[in-house]
Length: 214
Image 1 (tube, rainbow, N blue to C red):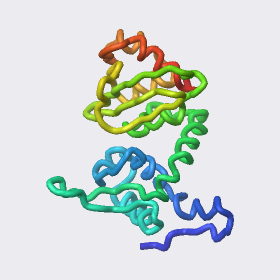
Image 2: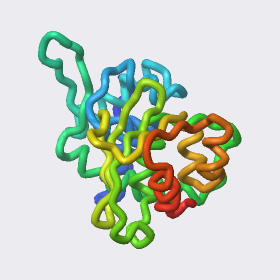
Image 3: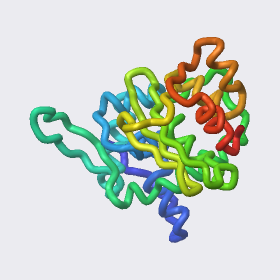
Image 4: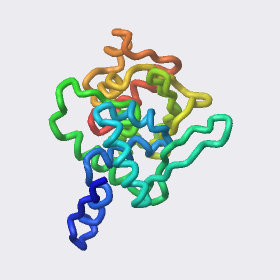
């Protein structure tokens, strides 16, 4: 295996890029921000990367103390990758990078992954617009379920179904992105059948206004 490249620069930025500056490294970390994943799940979230390159990036991140690999307890028994404390320290960096990148011209028809669009809720959330608004949501993207809580001027997301949700939003990653960006309204998406809402429709309409890209 080729030696990992270095900028050979004592600056903290250069030293950080020595660890996470290789292609696909930050996106692999993005895929782990919401919790551990198997290698096959990482490939699903990063369809443009080859298995060999992803394996190499994960080995490098593991050697740098950013990622660790462990076996789940029985009966699952699967090997998963997860972020270390050092790796989780990159969350704000990645979310800030996402905010910055939203201003770039998007690639036409480029796919957007499940974790990517869920993390964009955190990256683009506008606390001032939210004010004292409070609501619990369950977001369903295919077979994936996420709990989204808006309260006290902040948004929290987690894997798994929500208990006592005010509204359930079921759609695709692409259409959730269109909702958050303001490209399409809740009314348009519901009428077209591309978004299904259970519960408080007004809470979903308010939800769509809480993001800076809207």
